[in-house]
Image: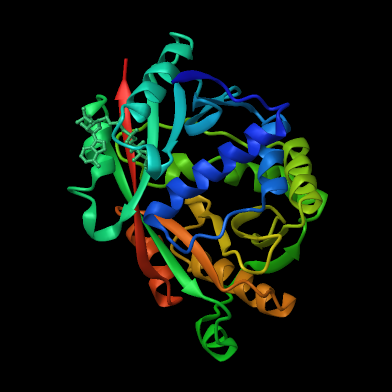
Length: 328
Ligand SMILES: CC(C)(COP(=O)(O)OP(=O)(O)OC[C@H]1O[C@@H](n2cnc3c(N)ncnc32)[C@H](O)[C@@H]1OP(=O)(O)O)[C@@H](O)C(=O)NCCC(=O)NCCS
């Protein structure tokens, strides 16, 4: 077995790598619908915004046994590294996962001190799943646990209308494929606070504001890949964005939608703005007549407020995501 960089110029290897990663995900989520191959490739071929990302693969006789993605934030959180490791179920328990993690750790510059490895397991197997035994055997410990929840789509419009709120003193607006330019600076500050403000176990995040240039580029990539971005914002009297919620609509109708961030600026909490922007966003999705079967969202188990809102909206627990951490 050889461990080396994924050859991004070799379409056959890329296809084998995509298939191995997909088989790995389906070991826990048998019905998982991935991004189509061509769309997935863009993540490897286009540079990341504000980060470096590359992949190592374990290869034997031309067969891709597994891979590890290495993701390095470059503008903030420069002590942190994300590793996402996947071994094809047909090649597990042969030391491939251990070798991939060791190779990734050895590649990363010594000034990065904190490795984070996420793993999805069934929600009732957090304490004893084999992925946990693997992580602990390579020196990682559980930092925090999030629960992923799913909501069948579409939702009932009458139920949404019942839940809708319009807190006094705020204006709610919804947009498909980009908010107005004037909103982007204040929205970008909020987006950079998600990891800082939401509970994340013992990992300390720095703010990572999204500049208007990054926002525009991310939007361009969504649109170029056939995805749509649905965002709802709350504006205060001065016209600044003080709360937002965003959902990404996939390029193919069989795939789930993804609830990305929802955040209310700390000095505007307690006015039900979180519920307001989430409901407004779901109403905007209904207007779009989106065809996906479901929406997925994930919340740290300590995030009581967000979980309460999601349960009101009919999201039900599905998978757990364990964040494993190792420090050096
Ligand atoms: C977790 C994963 C990467 C392990 O890959 P792998 O190549 O099978 O792991 P290895 O063979 O290197 O196992 C190393 C050690 O982990 C532990 N381990 C791995 N799989 C295990 C299992 N099914 N049951 C018990 N222990 C296990 C063992 O201690 C093993 O050492 P041993 O075989 O000498 O007993 C793989 O199952 C996978 O791709 N999972 C899906 C993606 C994921 O969740 N990745 C993040 C995991 S933290």
